[in-house]
Amino acid sequence: MKGLYGRAADGDAELKFVIQETTLLDVLGSHQVRMKVKACGLSPLDFKLIQEVGIQRDFIPVGREVAGVVLQVGPKVTFFQPEDEVVGVLPLDSPCSGLCEVIDIDEYYLVQKPEKLSSLCAAGALRDGICAYTALHTHAHMAAGHTLLVMDGSSPFGLMCVQLACYHGVKVLTTSHSPQKQAFLEQLRPSVARVIPVHNGSSDLLSVVLEETGGLGVDIVVDSGVCLHGDEEEEEDIKLLPHKHDIISVLGVGGHWVTSHKNLQLDPPDCRLLHLKCASVSFLNPEVWTTSSAQQGRYLHILKDIVEKMSAGVLRPQMEEAVPLYEATVAMETIQRHPKKKAVVQL
Image (cartoon, rainbow, N blue to C red; front, side, top):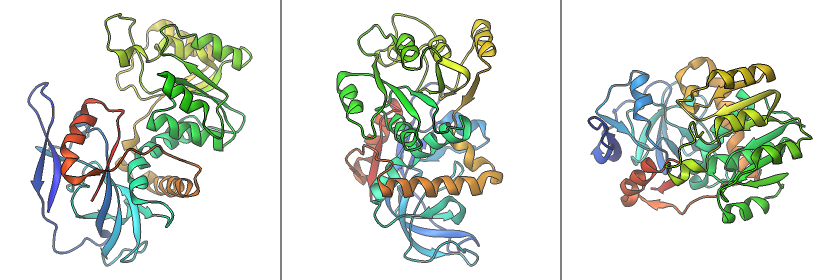
């Protein structure tokens, strides 16, 4: 069988994606499931993170969000039977690429896929759903009556946050990066409280948030990246990101800032302002669930809840058109350069 793998590059060179042959062991492990993959979601490959957790490989498997059908189960598997439709995320140290026709995976990384939910939708949106749950439930302890500010609510991750928060009775504010995205967000149902455009060059984020919250600030901010410096020669995408001081300013007393910025640097004045508000900063790393067996049960509960909410229409991801397998390499190269883009491959 053939799968897609990322080859480690020297220095600052870009990762190269190549098709490699792979073989499965003849005998399944006690708690392993052999599944036929029907759809696989593509996400950026964080090679630095893989190195930091001690995984040393020349070829890193690509495509980890998978949906498919169980073909065979190990002798001690209790959750699944052959012909079950399942969905899950391969762990970081998995030797298999999700783009292989058949893969082996531990049963503890899988949940049953509801019949009404398509494999393409499940595989394409599962990672964003995990990120949204981790940000809002695990870090921010979201509850009805809270006020939430989601940066770039039309992005795949942002949309999941908006829909999940609205379902739980949270007042949602969000920013838009273009007139088209603003129109899309204003048409959402359930509707958001306010869409704040930041594409017109002069964002009045702070004044709008204070107006909407009666001067109190929001309980939760979820960003999609942060602008650390006010340089004028930055890329267009970076210019649309909020400055870290703006985010801290819109936080209310006891607020939570959940950031996906890996190298966030806070200056003493920023820390002082956070201290005065008794506010906290949490870092969003969705890979953390599979790095410790202590959280396995909670992780499976999250996976199950995500697919059930997608099946019920509570979470409605905006899916891109499915990519055929022969275009997976080109699609992955695009995603690696533009991490906010999504793709799902149909096998």
